[in-house]
Length: 103
Image (cartoon, rainbow, N blue to C red; front, side):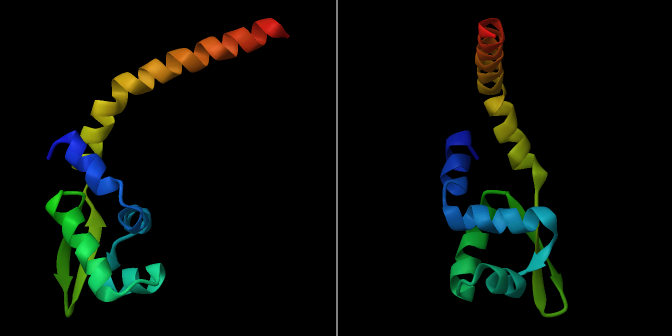
């Protein structure tokens, strides 16, 4: 998946909410439905997109499908963002020095 594709997947607010919940622990579809107060078909649709993009994976436990976050796509996004983070760090450091000089 390209970084642009990753941002398209991550740009949907409900998918971000799902990832926020899965960041803390593995959850079943039913538990996600309950915590998100969304319909099961809607949650399943978002999980399918996240799974196809590689951001989550699932396993079967009895009659349930349990979802968890997969770190690799996030690492790819973080790697792509690194030069921008360094740019902002330099600008923020310069701002901090400027503010310190004003005191």
